Length: 129
Image 1 (cartoon, rainbow, N blue to C red):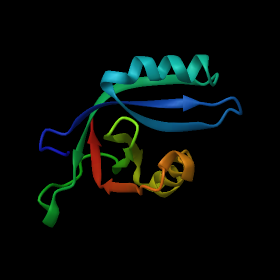
Image 2: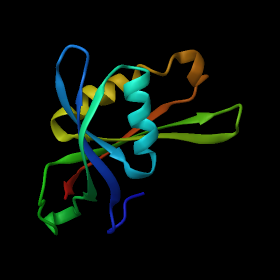
Image 3: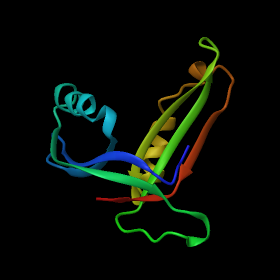
Image 4: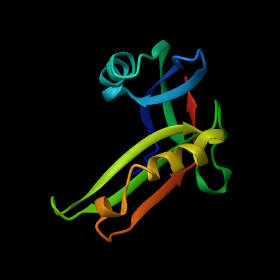
């Protein structure tokens, strides 16, 4: 699903209820809804949003990262009821990829998967502002 053009994202900082700050990368087309949910459902503050673009790291080192390393994490599963593959896609810092991948996997119970596999794909990349 990657292209040379990359993916439009919004980079922002999130302040949780314990005063802990983390960096987030959210797809531009869903950012306002995501920001609303972070505040109204979780009580988190979203600060310093700025547009950026995620770019895949090309095989063979044909592009040099100009910003932070951020991976595209994609989970897919077969939805027997809808008769199609469902995708979840997140963009996370390279350092947080394993932790976020594990959290996303935990959202899928064996009953929800219905015997079908949950597939995880991690695509290395970076963001440029």
